[in-house]
Image (cartoon, rainbow, N blue to C red):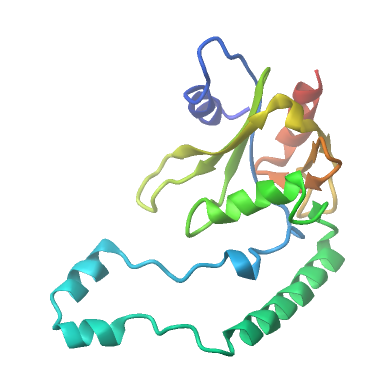
Length: 205
């Protein structure tokens, strides 16, 4: 277990809450991309907003995003169909990455990952205590050398039935599958592949 990851996880615990296991992970290949209905327009930086605020009113209005066009629903449908094809190809190449669909507990886990910030966190620290499951997202800025883990998702311990270590091929040697109480699951890959099996064993203990 990475000492820095453990230390940051401990900072999110409640008084008297023991840390049982933590593992730094990423989404596994084969996990579906952000769905079309969760996509948001790019956010302006503070610098861009300050610059635009100094422009004449007519120029500011010109630079405002245009209102959705009547055919935007058709475009979204076409984009969704293209994404479904891409997700299908990814599943064929890497195996299933989400079981249970977007309405399942695993799907809600993934929706939260995609909607928690404009850009999904590159790394997650999945943390188990005797009472909760927490997912911490690495929100470090490009100029920061250390991880900055922030709470992204939490649930009662009973929400996650267990962790399966299920290595697949070269790029998924550290594959982990958190199995949820409703039978759904999501595929993750341990950042350090050799951490996967000990983590699953610690959760099961």
